[in-house]
Length: 110
Image 1 (cartoon, rainbow, N blue to C red):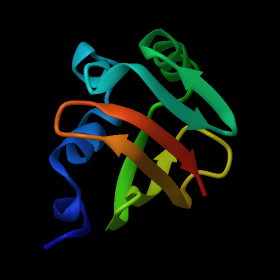
Image 2 (image 1 turned 180 degrees about the horizontal axis):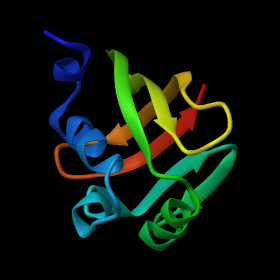
Image 3 (image 1 turned 90 degrees about the vertical axis):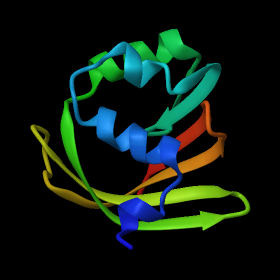
């Protein structure tokens, strides 16, 4: 089993869509009151998540590890894109609250 296959379905779907231009399918992954924390800034609610996505460059993801624990799922990636320091290895996506239907908490940090 690959690292990607070890992730729950909604998280696999997140990474399938995250590397593409924004779509309603991507935003539908999040609960209306979801929180995404990136670069120490919280983006609360789908509208704030939309604004955050518009402000970050489109990147590609290589999943290098998936750890599923009682506190959530941590996906470690290498991201590549049009930004200083690309590619960046070891970026962790911490899915702290989610179920089969929605992501409610995602923290992105090394």
